[in-house]
Amino acid sequence: LPKVLGFYFIGSDNLTLHDQRQINRFKSLYKEFIEQDINSNFKNKILAALNYQTGWIYVNNSEPKKAFKPLFKSLFYGSVPIKMRSLNMLIKGINYLIK
Image (cartoon, rainbow, N blue to C red):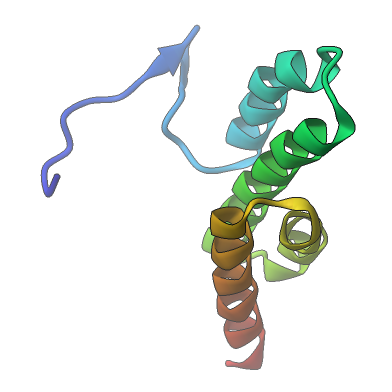
């Protein structure tokens, strides 16, 4: 949608911000699923999605060096769509460093 329709809040914090607070929220949200007694392959996919989200935030906040470790993890363990998105973010982060 081309128009902002609103914001989401947890307590007094805006859930839609993209910074370290958002990374902490993602970790908190994903933690429940990661800690469940599930097979390791599924757990790795969940961790890959979390790592992709973390890397995405770092790249888009002009912190590509912080993004590389989580993006490589998501590239290695993620589903095909997560791998493709991670690769795209890695390229974006590298381009940011080259400029």
